[in-house]
Length: 367
Ligand code: AHM
Ligand code: MG
Image 1 (cartoon, rainbow, N blue to C red):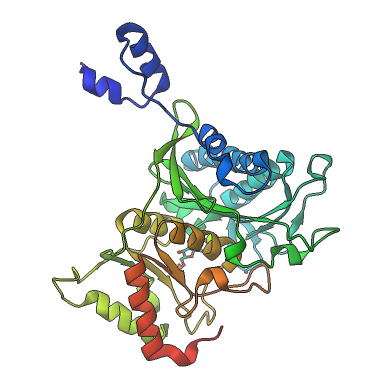
Image 2 (cartoon, protein in one colour):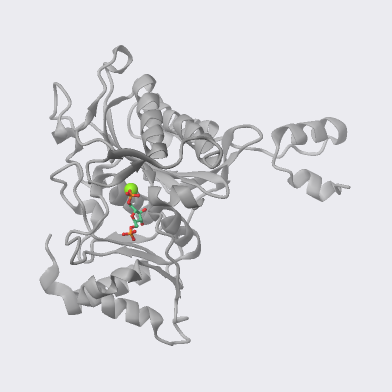
């Protein structure tokens, strides 16, 4: 039997509406992603409908990808595709599917002139009739954490949106993408986890939306997200410990020391899906580090479509993102698939890690 209180908590519009008809109690207001974007259009400095349409297109593709992710164990879409992407990594079938969905959605939406994707070596020029007046470029990692697909662990999509710089005219070129993270007009991620969530910013705070499968809409569930200034979780692949810079080794040791005041030792949590590790740290507080290692002297993660968008979100939520020495959002990109070390999360934790880097690894600063 459902008591009245629980009944009103049920997150379904139709239940709420039915209840209203019979009891005249106030309607619970559900704000869908589409409604929210329209309500917040005034926050966006450029033509009002453009960003709304871009975000709408991304939301549609995310729902299609989520549908496939949730049935990945059933459908014949698991396993290697037998191809490698531009970084020489094995591609999974879902990577390919996600890449196609996001490209198709952006291509038919009309606002995107070109895409840089982790899965494509060169930029994807969108040369269609509907896109002839398009002014935005999108960088994306369509399916991050793909090594986790086969084992039912959360994966994600990361995206970043830039407006074409005024001085560029003519056909799209790599120049359109060589903008610093501070120039992003919007960025976000989708996490395909126990529920699917879309989190984004346009530079006026961070808001999170959970997909309600019963109505097929992302609904506002995490308004004005704030990352705690301190946390008690550190996320790093400790298997690489011997290859870490000295500053990172010292910081990891600091995390493991006992100190009641700073709640150490911290917990170590590493999912191996950047979006999932970042999302947890955004909500609970924590730090994620992918440093330079002997194997990957510039780190593993990509500046344009992994680090910049998450750095924008982190800063907008009161957190911080650095390459160990410099603010991620101020790094000058020089190529589409450029890598950078990443230290991201609660501001006091990132400050401490940077301090260790300054003291013990200053000579490895290569930016
Ligand atoms: P991917 O884009 O190929 O999935 O690689 C990025 C992923 C991140 O999601 C994750 O944090 C990291 O690589 C894990 O790398 P490692 O296995 O070296 O720890
Ligand atoms: Mg990735």
